[in-house]
Image (cartoon, rainbow, N blue to C red; front, side):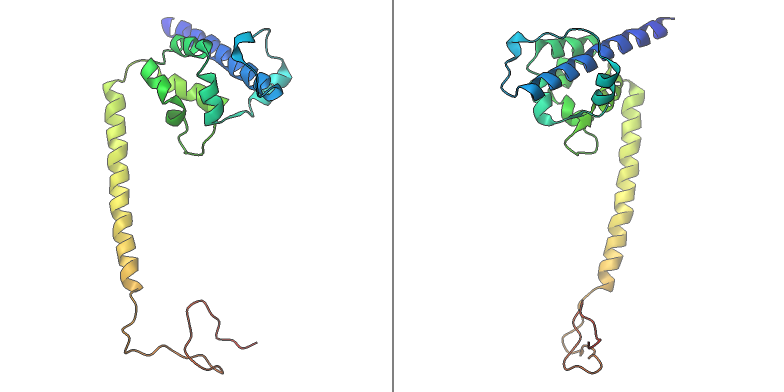
Length: 178
């Protein structure tokens, strides 16, 4: 029962965060020089807003602007995101390094940041890192094998010549005469 209540509370707070981010984005889109002092979120999001918000891509610039609001800090605290995690939150959630996150990535990422790190979290990360290291070793060995196959020929060895043309073939050029 407590877990269900926690899930409901998280969903309500996450909905407030989405509404806040969307409202700031819309207001800033209307007036790029807008000052935050005169801002308040009002009213529910309608279906069109929800559809459009699902397409919103949050840039580092927008996220930095959002972080200037005490309301964002309050909402993130309510979602159990510590001050330390808030500082690098955008980089943490931009897992593909593409420079943008959508609202779903924001909420899912925040849900995974909640609370203290558990031993299983740390062990899981350690196992993933080991797997990546093993894959990188194999990749490095494969690249080394490929490189030995592409060693330059000794200068004494002549290059093949093309048929019907003068001189040696050069890599990337066709031997056909047009």
